[in-house]
Length: 116
Image 1 (cartoon, one colour):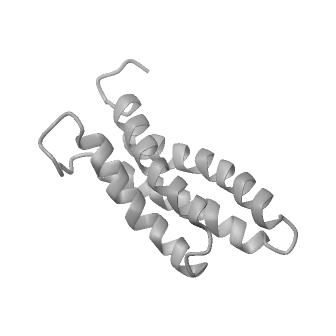
Image 2 (cartoon, rainbow, N blue to C red; image 1 turned 135 degrees about the horizontal axis):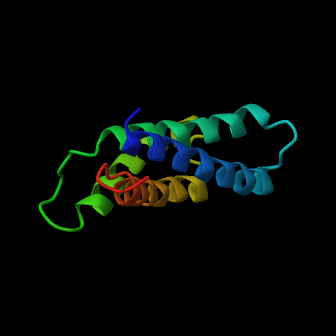
């Protein structure tokens, strides 16, 4: 597996755990297990997509990583936000921010020329 892809998926999974905690504290854990798992899975898919998008140039500047991460985070997090009829704005905003974080981490630590 490509190093960037693995780091993207693992970062998404870790941030997904934070989402489970945050959403669970807001809406409750009991009775919302399926939604909480879906929230975690959404962040894993975000990491997968961002991990695969390493060569995508959206803007021709040093901010490409952040812009790409925000846009891809927005696309992926919108899917889960639509299922809640846009009632969970903190999760939506976190998803956009997580996109930038995942892309930065995957870009920074996913370089093949780094020693293992």
